[in-house]
Structures are given as structure tokens and as C-alpha cells.
Length: 233
Image 1 (tube, rainbow, N blue to C red):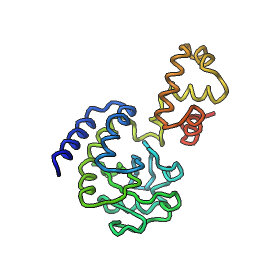
Image 2: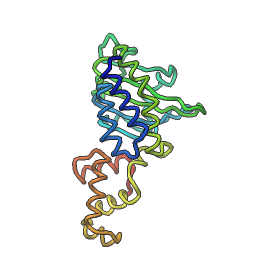
Image 3: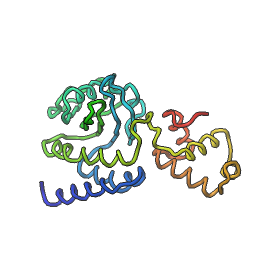
Image 4: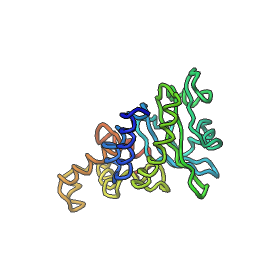
């Protein structure tokens, strides 16, 4: 590994062990991860090894239809990792692919996928990291994937409760509450009066919610939250 790469990996490891929140992960760690393993989509989730149910915890840019509670049951690439517990690369018509591409990837226009994870000591579940849009998977990238995975697991385990339902840990109780009031047509001022907080505080909560859900505006955030079961209206 070249000197610059060694420094990048060292910085990444240090960041993983000091991260304290999901916004912190997005702003400080995720950019470093993209430089170490260039990719277009990233997701993390836990898989119950007894029934292969995926509990989605973090999704960055993967199609929402691809990742869900039954993903691992329907997608052979995830089942394959559970069987082999080693880095996998699945690419469309790519000679470096370790396995042929599944129809599920093609249906969601995911041209290739790299998968690796950590099996917990109790052997009850595995924590998987999925990288979509990895254009090549030489031995160097595979080695980096092996190196970064344990530290990613450490960082994200500090942030969220991965025994929760998909996406549940993304929003605080107050953020979900405010989204529900917005759904029924309340303004920031009205929500502030109901909750006993200022309209400015409401606005801050909404902005954080939009950032957490990777949404473009509050209407988009509501749609994502409803789809992922984060709010009930």
C-alpha cells in the first residue's frame, strides 16, 4: 500500500473510532470511505442468520425497492455472502466478478455490487456492508474492503440500534412527531405551539430530518419516512 493510501486508511480508522452521530458519519467518514473504495451507493444492515431477514439501518443512494426486510431472502448475492463469509463482487458481464449477476440487480439498474460484513460472535446475525457501483474489484480493493469493514462496524454500532426495525433509529421521537404534524397540515408556528417549542426549533428539527433521510425537501422526507415505516399518519 502506498504512503498516501496508508495515511488515508489511518485517518479513516481514527474517524471511525471517534464518530458520535449519523450526520457526523456522513460528513466526516463517508467521504473518506468513498476515496478508499470508490462507489456510487452504500448501505449497511444486519441479517438474522436463522431466517435471512435483513434489518436495514442505513441506506445511501440504493433504490428503496432493492433494500427491504426480505432483501436477503430474494437476492442471491446476500445469501451467497452468508454462506461464504468473504468479500464478494457481482458485476454485469465483468470478468472480475466472483459470481454472476442476479436479476434483482438488473431490475434495479445496479450494475455491480461488492458485499462484505462481520458475523457476530453469537453467530445469530451478521452485519453486512453493500457497495453499489464499484466499477472494478482488483485485489487491492478487496484487501481494502477487508480492512475497513471491522472499523465501519465499530463506527455504526456506536450510532444506531441495529436491533430496531428498518430505519427506526434514524429519527428521534421529536423529529418523527414533527413530521406527523406536518403530514396533517400544521405549520411550523402551529407545531411549535402544540409542542411548546419555538418555530425556529421546529425548523431546525425539520432540516435535520431532511438531511438524515437524504431528502430534497420536507415533502420528500415525509414520503421516505412513510415508506420506511418511520411515522404513522
